[in-house]
Length: 313
Image 1 (cartoon, rainbow, N blue to C red):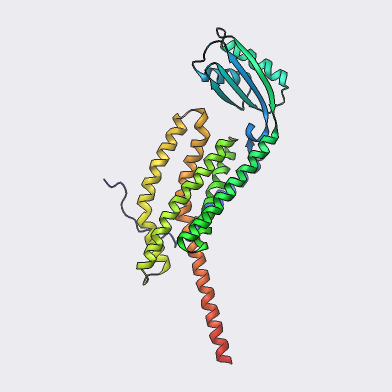
Image 2: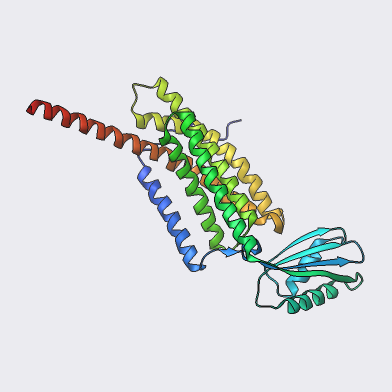
């Protein structure tokens, strides 16, 4: 069964249009950052209050606890549960620890009148934990990008290909993060994990396409570099669309039906899946082409200047 026919699109000829689209995405990201006054950091990065609550009877549905906390006007929180024990981690607010305890306990008691509860522990979660997590997240991205550059450079025997692929990944990660800021979603460890997943997914598509280009370069020496790249992209385009479509459908299903916990991760994956295909086809390979053509032109100019100088002598 064939859903897509083979294509014959001039990607290299239209590369400047795609560069403009990427610039527009970056402009949206910058506007979102300014409009939202930066990312909306969650408790993982800002610190907050942690409360441990025990119930007399086992809880059947954690959603009722979530609704009770929302009714207490707490908008940013995380829940962890084990049978009759619930740990509430809420983002730092203007409420004092005592005010937070009273509002949460009253709301939970109203929601669970037949299941007595007791607050076993309440304490602040310091921002030093957030600083440590921020530093570790930056290290994770740095070493991931460095490893990808080294691998792709070794795989294709040229640092150019590695740098181009990582530029595509940075493009996807920054724009995905921009869309997180745009809808004012909380930035927490889940967001970091999703962005790293997007980076890994993006590099996979890029390596497949680069492999095809290298293979066609070996057997298409009579063709121009632009024709070889266009041919390679068109050859893998159907495969890329079908593969990405399956990931997109799964991510969309998680986004709409996966629940609150997985919602942000699925949101980033939906956007990252589309961006991964876009950067591979419309950004990474045109960047390689631009670099190779400019380098070739510089070599020709140097050779020409050398020939002119030798004639003058």
